[in-house]
Length: 114
Image 1 (cartoon, rainbow, N blue to C red):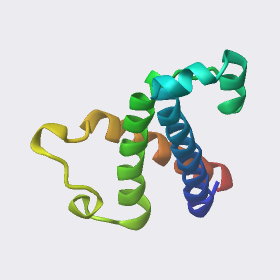
Image 2 (image 1 turned 45 degrees about the vertical axis):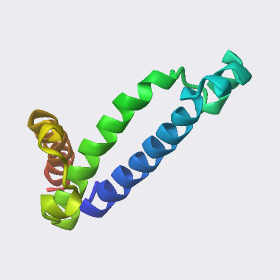
Image 3 (image 1 turned 180 degrees about the horizontal axis):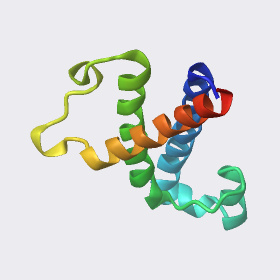
Image 4 (image 1 turned 180 degrees about the vertical axis):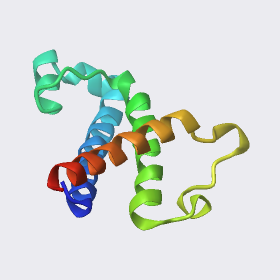
């Protein structure tokens, strides 16, 4: 996988994650939950089991992945990506974990091609 392939793959994953968040927010409203049956809800999220309370976890994942994506692929400084309040800074260990995983994918490609 080349650098550009990884960038496109991550971008697609982020789009899918954003779509799940958007749809999950819709289901958080109690009036929408009663109108959607369990079977419809499965179809609503591409056949996966998904609960509306998972939106917070997905949003957190999206935020951290977005920060690292901007750092790695666009060289964007952190203060241009977001300006959180003092008590809402991103978790450094998650950022490092995501970066390590993506760099490992790039390293494997370089080793296999050599």
